[in-house]
Every structure is written in structure tokens, then in C-alpha cells.
Image 1 (cartoon, one colour):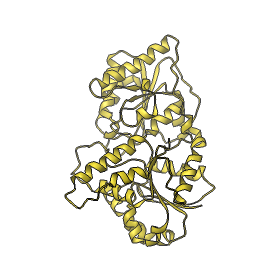
Image 2 (cartoon, rainbow, N blue to C red; image 1 turned 90 degrees about the horizontal axis):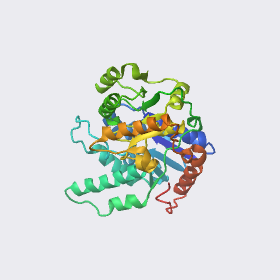
Image 3 (cartoon, helix red, strand yellow; image 1 turned 90 degrees about the vertical axis):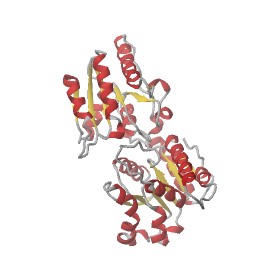
Length: 370
């Protein structure tokens, strides 16, 4: 099958996914078009213009299937390049614009949400990485449509729900590594983007709580950094002092995997995660997840790995880490959950089946794929 894949805002998680597709479904012939993940407002609105007039020859080739990320302005692109309108199309949602937490810098711009909605309507099928992502998208669409003044067709969200499914982003085989703890000191790792939506303030409160509890621990704080780093990270580093493990982005994949293998616990304090690949990679290397019981986490891990959200959240996180420390001191190991079902070796068949059904315009797609 000849497949055109469009990643209009090719952030790290999007590249992670489509590189996995090409590597694990190499029986297909892939053509990949990407645009860099910068200038968000322009990129999501301008990608159809950029591609339609700079990649015309590529877009007008014969394809059996188009796969586009939700950042793609699909309705406009199909209008600007009519050839694309007759090709079966799947849109994959790594995230949706309805469920992002607000940073306080927003100006009430509804356009990203409208673009998500139009792109979904222009597709033959839409797929989400988690049920949380799917549910928040559909509820967000319903709320938005209720606010529009007039001439809103009935049943839009229901139509999208009928032609949607869930299929997680799989992990590469090299993410699955044997656990390799190094000492009696509890080793924690926080491996997320250094941005407000990953909860640095919550992490700061948690570190303070762990210090106040007198717990002997080391914390690795790694992950992608950008020009404007939240002030909370400076405070966290000062507070940790000698408890600081690795600090900052890890360029080497091998070194990053080694840190994950050595970690006892992988932490999340996120305000939003649509799947939580960073945590899943920690778990694949043997770390125990300590994550909030919200967002996508309750569908990924049993309740015992999730701390309580809302009031008392910091106390709940500290208690979870302390329980782990007490169990280990008593000679009882707490195993990481088994997530082997999320590997490419297991999930490649499901992806291939989905692509073939969409390419053949088979509408009988299980809406609860996984």
C-alpha cells in the first residue's frame, strides 16, 4: 500500500510515532511530509497553504491511504489540492485542543479547536491514542457547538464518535530494558518537557514534601527544555541540593535508557498528558509509576499506582513514594506493571488492520480498539 503521512507540527512525540510506523510497517511504501514544531498559531493554520503550493508534485501522486495528524488543516488542504479528496484518510489525534490546561497567556482563541473539529470532519476515520483523549475531544466538540449562534447541524459529535477508535502509540522494542537499581537510596526520575503543563509547581511541592518527610532519595530531572524555563525548576534544584541526580536534557538515547533502568520510581505531576509516553518508557525499564489518578493514567495503570488528585495531592504523592521506600526496606519488592502489550511487536498488527480497513473504506471499525 502507498501511504502519504502528513505531520503538520512534528513535535517529538509525533516523530516518535511516525518513525515507529515506518520501521514496523515497512511492507508499505511511505511518503512523509513534516513541518517543524514552531510558530504554533501559524503552523496549524498555514500548513495547508505551505504544502499545497510547495509540495504539489508530492501531494498529487497516487496513494492508497492518507494518514494525517490532528494538527493538519485537512479540510483546507483537500480543497486546495482536490486530488486528495478522493483518497481514504485517517486522522490520528496525539492530543486535542479542547483539553489543554491554560497557562494564563491565552487570548480566548477558538481557532485551534475549530481546526481540530474541521480536520476530524474531513477524515474518513479518526483515531486517538487514549480513551481520555477521545472523550475530552468529543465533549469539547459538544460544548463548542452549543456556543455557536446558529445554523449548527445536529449530530456532529455523534457522527465523529461513530467513526472514531482508540489505538495507543506503541513503544519501541529498545524501550524494554531490565531493571538495574544501583543502591539502597530511592531513585526517582521526572522525565517530561520543562513546561508549565507538565506540572513543575506540583513537582516543587512534592520535592518539598519528600524532603520534609526525611526520605533518603535522589531525583533525576530530565526532559526537553525550551528558551523559557519555568522558575520552579531553579527552586527545585536549590531545594534538592545533594539529593540532585542527573539534571537536564539527556542527548544520548543509551544514557537516557540507562537512567530509566536505574530508577526505582518514575514520576508524573502533569496537568495534562494524553498518553504519557515518558512514564511508559520508565515503566518499560522497570520503574514503578507514581502518577495522578486523572488524565490518561487510570486507563494505563491499576489504581494502586495512582495517587489522589485535587486536595491533598502532594501528601498523596509523598505517601506513595514513602510506601515504596518502606516496602523495599522490609525486603518486599513492588513490581512495575506489565506493559508489554504496548510494544510495537504486539501492536503492529492492529495498526496494519486499521490502515487496511480505512483504505478499503470499511466502516466496521471497532471503536474501542484497545
